[in-house]
Each structure stands twice: as C-alpha cells, then as structure tokens.
Image (cartoon, rainbow, N blue to C red):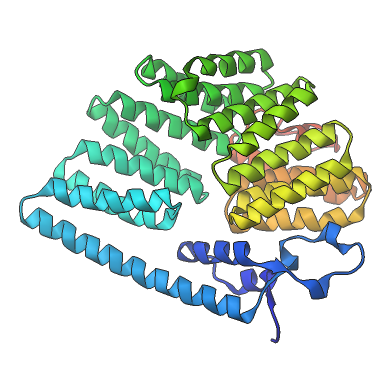
Length: 424
C-alpha cells in the first residue's frame, strides 16, 4: 500500500478498543483533504473518508500514541505506589488527594480515558477508607468521563453511586450535581421528560445555595421544555437564568445564548436567533461546542430557505468537529448535510448519511444513530426507495424504544410509511 492512507482504511483496520479512541480522534483532527481524490464538483460531497494521513504524520501519531500509552501505565503505577505508601504511613488524606489531583488534571485536558483510570483508583481507595467526600467526587467524575466517551449505562451507574454517597453524607451540593448528571445522561438518549424530572429535583434541592448551579439547571430545564414543544415554559426558564447571570461562567453564557437562539428559532424569530447564535459562537468553550452552534446556524439557514448558507455553516461545523476530534458532532453535521442534499433532490446525500451512521456506531452514540436512520429514511422515501425507507424508520424506532426516547424526533413523525406503528 503506497502513498497516504485514507481515514476510511485506517479506521477500518484500527481495533475498536477504549484505549485506542484517543489515537482515532488524533488521526481525525490531523488529517487533510486528499487532493488526488478531488474532481470537479466533488468537494460538495466529501466526508471524513476523503481525508488522508501521510506516512510522516502517521509515524509521528503512532509514536506519540505509544509513548502516551506507556506513560499512562507508568503514571498509574507511580500513583498507586505513592497512594499505597501514604496509606502505609497512616496518611490516607494524602493518598486520595494525590490521586484526585491526577484525575482533575486529566479531566481539564479532556483525557477521559486517563480520568477513568485515576478516579477508579480514587473511588476504590475512598470506599476502603470510608471517605464519603472523595467517593462522591470520584463517582461523579467517572460518570462525566463515561458520558463523554458515549457509555450512557456506565455514566448512569456512576452518577447513581455518587448520589447514594452524597445522600449518606448529607451533602446537598453533591446530590444536586449527581442529579444534574443523571439528567444529562437522559438528554443524550432523548429522554427529555426523565431529564426534566432530574433537573427539577436538583433545582428544588439546590434552592438559593448555589447561583451558578441554579443558572445551569434553569438553562437545562429550558432545553428540556423546548424539546417537548413547551415553548412558554422554555422561555420562562431561560429568562429566570438571567437573574444569576453574574454567577455564570463564559461557557455557561455561551450555552445560554445558544439555547435562547434555538428557542427563538422555534418561534420563527430568525434574525434575533441569528444574533444569539453569533454571540454563543464567539464564547464557545470548545471545538465541539463551536461545531454544534454552527450546526444550529445551518438549521436556521434551512428554515430561512437558504440551502447555500446552510451548507456553508455545516461545512464550517464539520471543520470544527474534525479539528476537535468530536465524532458525535461530526455525525450530526453529516446528518445535516444529508438533509440539505435531500432538499436539493441530490442523490449524493447517501454518502453523508452512511458516514453519519458509521461514526455513530463506531463511537457508540445510539441516539445519534437513530436520528441518522430517521433522516436517512426521509431521504430514501423521497427518492422512491420505499422498502429502504421503511427499514430505516423501523431501525430508528427500535433504537428510540430501547432508549425510552419521548417525544419522537420530528424526522420520525414526518414519516408516514405504512405499518410498523407499534412504537406510537
């Protein structure tokens, strides 16, 4: 095999193991468009598969990945040695603090696999010592890490353990954060009513104790209400969050602007929504957030009837998702590009949907996979492929039923394929 290797080939041969997710993401972010595969007009249809890594870049990545793997193992052994030494010396607090510091550093750098390793040690040691404070912290950090890595079931278990420990310790803030985490897991599966129940419980428990937590929860409640088409409730919650504006971080404010923009978009106040999306984008804390905001801007352009602008924003979102190695965001962007092609009656939209499905399955995002199936079913139906459309719709409904998604996303409600109404 000569010349640069495409990501399509590299991802196909790379084992799908948790410890190699970082390598896959690095390959994604450092890849470049393959000039040899470009033809006149092809740029509009390219996906991640049209990107390559040259031998030098690949060698550098593999060397760095190997070194990281070795250093991770060494760090774990050093941390364990220091922790056991501190325990032997009768200094349990030092043992836990050292391990927790390593976990915090990993979390700040979004090294989620490392965060899992360190906080698993923290939780194990804390449980042996009966240290509830570190048990609460470790379990919720593990939940957050699993959530970022797409393992919703593991995230749920961790947040539940953190909640139980917080209840045992009468730690109100710990309970609030654990309940919020459980709400976030529900949103990842489209279970908006479940998420809303968790957020409500957390907000009531929080009271006036933590203004930043209150603001974050009210923004989340606004999102949950909007997703259930209760726009007045959504507006009430988003307005209430303004009361604690000074306590919110820049990242929180970006979320507020983005959520407010989506609410205004639902009310067809497009000019105002566009202004808020622009503010959200300027304050976005990560490539992932930037990609998702740009995808919302693409949605806004579609609603305004501009397919050209929608494609422009979606392609910018793709760039941020690739640079930030954010596969879920990238899959959602490809769903958007596929939908744009559907509105153009362009059969080349198939490639975007197939790539969205591949990413969602490879990186374990079942809700995104179901969304891709639903939008792809619309594409197939309008192309006259009724059997394909029915199969895709059924696959989407099966996933949504397994996740407990309610209400069903618009793409599924828009399908009127005969039969298979058992999920309604």
